[in-house]
Image 1 (spheres, rainbow, N blue to C red):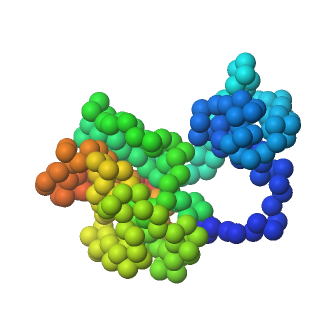
Image 2: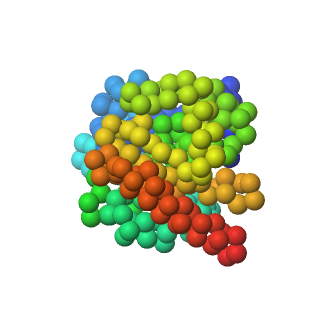
Length: 256
């Protein structure tokens, strides 16, 4: 895993502002100079200069009065994902889980204390949520994240919690370390994790970790609406399907 860091004294302000603009465009879908400046608290001239620099390098595109992210960022994201052995090994099994369940399946890893979605596929009846490839979320309120945290050393989990905290997403989110660590112990014993409407109300998820030689590479999951992920299907059958896919992925990683 990659530990979160706090080296604020060594940061370069201009670089930080450029990425703040990129992240704003990512979150909003686009914006003009004045809008961006007002929302990130930077002067219009500074925003304009950064946008022009990014535009020259094809990282943003000017659509009239609106700037949007350029497709060149796909190249960077694709190359970043290619370094993940887990993505290549898990892709076919994620597709298989979608065929078996009709819901949403994904594979994720942890970086800098956050969960990162590497690949996601949706079935015909899958619901649309805010998650997609590249989405980064805190691990304490997701089945994927908890499946991984359950196999981290306790001091590493505490480091993540010290950095990111335990923000409440729904009334079911673990709000104390005691609650979370108790859940992690249960997850470690049974081999899979549940997200019972802990990040998004009305959504449930089942996840299993991918571990090679005590190295937690990530986790696989299936998620769907609580009204469909219910009863034995949710508590017994779906976990077995996810664990079956997980075992195939581990074999592929170990012997490829």
